[in-house]
Image (tube, rainbow, N blue to C red; front, side, top):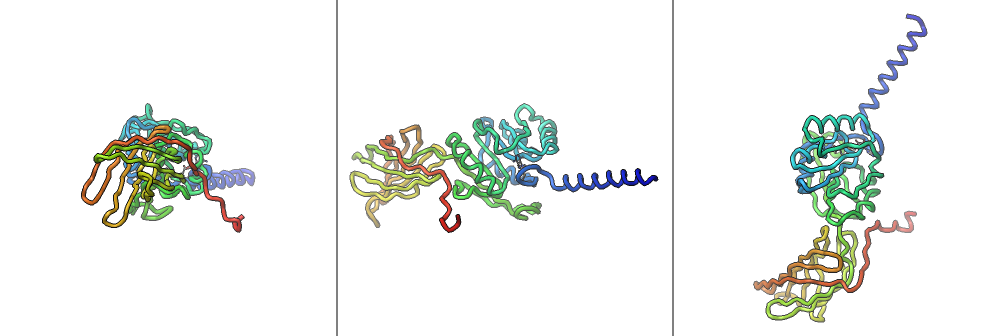
Length: 305
Ligand SMILES: C[S@@+](CC[C@H](N)C(=O)[O-])C[C@H]1O[C@@H](n2cnc3c(N)ncnc32)[C@H](O)[C@@H]1O
């Protein structure tokens, strides 16, 4: 072999080795490719209760397993985005093999530029800093949109639901263990609310002022002009739940509100627990003034700047 062809051959061998290394670390963009184990995919879809009326977007879709499983098992429509064209090809092939190309699509796109507007469910297996970067965009989506993430959290936006799975076949990330986190995009329930609720032969005048941070509500309340303690107040999509407690000890009366928010109206059921007695009534509260809504990250302490 001539010197020239030996060098040419060596060049190709080196390039081949380089390509093999590159493919060994699959995935393009801000995080390498690590597939979510199939048992975890199933658990994520179950937690989100996906169905045929959902539209699912998987951000960084890898071989497409989340979108394809949702389409095949639950009839869910949706798409995945990725920057790795080899993985995108695999995802398209998987959709074809499973007979779901009418419902499952895959697009070459940077996930930070994806239009999420039509999503009812968003799934991800991304690094926490990526989740947090996506957070402001997600929080602007329609209230009730579910977000399910494998292994990584959303910073100060605490999950509404979570689960820990033992996954012996998982060797990367958190070996042997998978965490699933789920959030509902919260509606804006901040403000001053007033209602007059006829229950157990009397009318309760309810006044509540809520500040809202992500899905958590805090503030102050009165029932019939007397202070009431707010407990367990939170928003889950458009659902608002809270307790107002008046009195104390054995004489405490607990008012349990479960309502649905539509604009400036909150309607639902009030259950009044007084000792062993439980009274029940429908309520409709009106928002009479807006409140403080905080969906942003806390300012870093001055020392950290
Ligand atoms: C950890 S894998 C998860 C794959 C899949 N969602 C799953 O759970 O099996 C992350 C994927 O995100 C893709 N990715 C990373 N940064 C991206 C970006 N900026 N835009 C689109 N995809 C990206 C990678 O190519 C990789 O396939």
